[in-house]
Image (cartoon, rainbow, N blue to C red):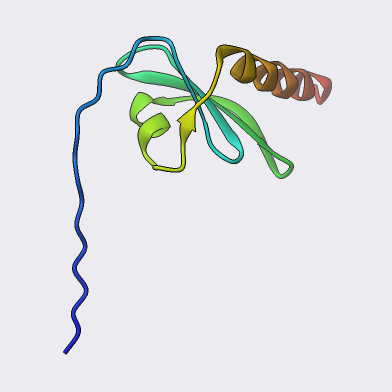
Length: 85
């Protein structure tokens, strides 16, 4: 007999704000306990939005990045969105 067991681990981490994170197509700036800015750079879904700060830590594939890397992508997406108006 085989059964599937799903385990989860919860941990508390301490971060210094602002914190910068990235995934394959998202960049995050965590600026408070409650909020982060998410920059989405996908051809079909380009956006800049505010979300709960936990989103930047919700997946183990999301990793730290530099302020410069976040700002480069933020400015690229901002300029693209402004050009559409």
